[in-house]
Image (cartoon, rainbow, N blue to C red):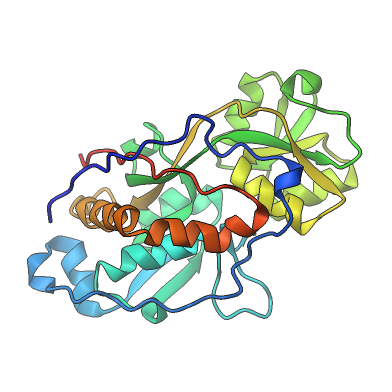
Length: 291
């Protein structure tokens, strides 16, 4: 497959969010199936061809991020923007979304799951970094966001300047902890985002910090109790993880994203899942070249 960069550029403001933008968590109850495309498996190579021929794929996603990757106790499958993008990518391997095996993935096990072959892909608010690319492959990005703060609704905190030396939580294994410390806060790691949110509600920490899109979902889920504040103090390129031993996966992933950017299905996925929270659909980001 031939990969061509999209010419669309990301809006300079990224996905800046505020409490006013959080009217609905965008959980994506309307979890529609997506049919796989008519793909000639013989045109693919390596692991990509094996997935195509098997007719199934294992994808690691979050289960605790409203609007991005969330699975309620009453749902059979997760829902959210990451999930919809995963369906789009899987369809380019000829896989129906009903044939995707969803695997719950937390921040701390994304690289191990790919290295050990427990999943074929990871779409789990997975920031692309040089350090991670030494261990796994990362294609994309399919979204660009930035780190902000989640605080109690009655908090007077307006940004990181008000939290110097204060406890700010995020999840263990995420890039957010390092950025919190760089900005003068005291990063505290927890196993899951939902645990971190509860610590903010309980007053055990002053704030939570991670990508604004993630925080928007939790603010909406806890409307009247939590709010998103502050300017973005990082830029996070969110991509698709795959095994470094399966470099041929990158072109299939990027081709599927390019097509989704061009035919509007990427924007539709965003509007369906994150749009209800009031976040405006951004321009599609520019994809990195496959290495």
